[in-house]
Length: 384
Image 1 (cartoon, rainbow, N blue to C red):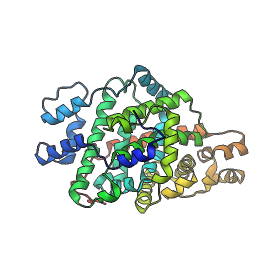
Image 2: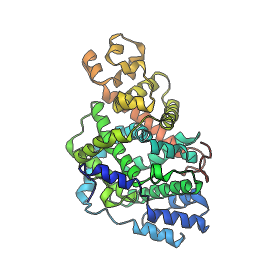
Image 3: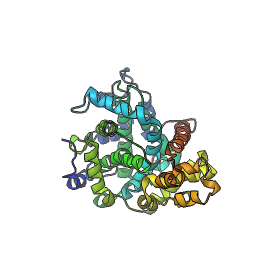
């Protein structure tokens, strides 16, 4: 039975002490037995595998593990797959952008999550923003493809992310620096399910904060998508998010303020992300973009993340003053206050512009460097 709001606190506490024993043992043995030459070679190896392809060239244990991960989630139906696809048909562009901004920054508000990412080499060090966005963008792009929930491609790619998580746990275990008594397991089941909440119902809340209409059916479809992903990340069924968007909203809202805090690691990570965004959205466009993210997150959580206050965030006051920065692109980010001043809510325009720019950002992240596969240093703190 999936997670419920009634028992979420005690279940997440238990989940914080659990990693992914099957994947952890596999990754440890493959590397320790020299069947795979380090975590980066593991990533390159699994990146070449397509659903249904011959796997005889793989280490037998890896091939067997991948085969064992192919079954559908318990209770998964054709209607669930259709609902997930329909959501992305209606909201493809803007939701990808919000997952890559509000979603990623939300994961930095988890103190344990921010420390984990910051300390794990190129996934969190000085060269980290593009790599992290690359990691996440692959998943977001895969989620919104036609047939993703029926042709096996998404489940295969999420399984690869599962092995990335296992590799992160191995780095922390071998470093001797992880405080298990304080933090539980690195990339624990609690963190995985919490991140799924951030990328699902927190994004749905962000869409509402931006004045977007998301039907109940579409919200359900988005939750079906994340239920599917949560399962293939190796989460036991009792901690997998249900397909009920209202229930997940209740359980996440109940737990969020226990989980989200302002930390130096979280602010550092957010600063890196914002700097990376600025390469693609310079000048007033960047200010408008950040104002939109602030509105989507709300000031309370944007302040925790260390996002700047800009003139654009002042909303109607700036518009009423006729400030140049809020014309065109900028004016579209101010939501209800902008509507009160101008008589038109221009969110659709800015979301369209920002979504297009963010797609370019994602593509650059995925392509960055000659080696476009996930990268991680072989030791903790390398490149912190």
